[in-house]
Length: 301
Image 1 (spheres, rainbow, N blue to C red):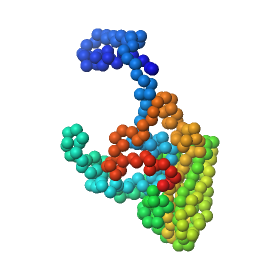
Image 2 (image 1 turned 90 degrees about the horizontal axis):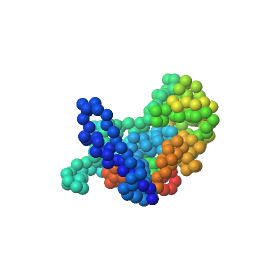
Image 3 (image 1 turned 135 degrees about the horizontal axis):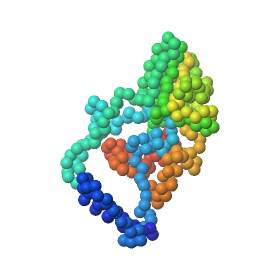
Image 4 (image 1 turned 120 degrees about the horizontal axis):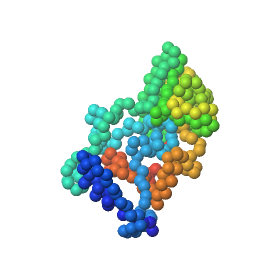
């Protein structure tokens, strides 16, 4: 059993009584030997709340932002008004006041947020997020590209830049679906902030009309926290791409978590970790709440 020492009380009593105009010295005496109660060690724990990029862009080490094109999905029982999502109005548990949560600064039209499209040379190209013939029912959205001319490329800067570390290895992968209607291949590159290639590989696409997975191992020769991913399509026609991933090979205890953040949590030595935690347990609505049992299984599902 740990001991809870009596030092909070004099501090809390002191603060309300402070006179900001009084320049005399104040003294707080703390008697660390005076024990007032005992508490069980297993009451000390933490919770993880998926806000402020604590999950995506934080504890989860995926480096590509909006890698599955699901960022802008809106729950069926919510409505979009301008740049806000309004959750269903429900009565407050204590007061009975009816109100709904509002999520501000949301652009539902920008479904490919995080991705930019650049036609090559005299080409024209468009991209749009669709959910027909998905690679996975659990992640139905994918990116459709229509290219006319000599090609186009899409790019992603991750969470304020891809953090590449010299000597480290990363697993890169994506899914693509194409037919003979697209007459080119795909080149993936990681570009440093100086514009030079850190990594580059060309993939020969299987044009059987089915989703196929492509992967490569990236080894960075430099340290650069402002790199970006570019995926270049050197032909014309229509194709689909989805679930574009860049993950460090070395993770916390091999569990797939970002090493520095997970180690910081481990160093706190909590007796339990509550997840989901905070108000995010409720979600924007009950439909949108985190159903953690549904997160067990193949990642893409």
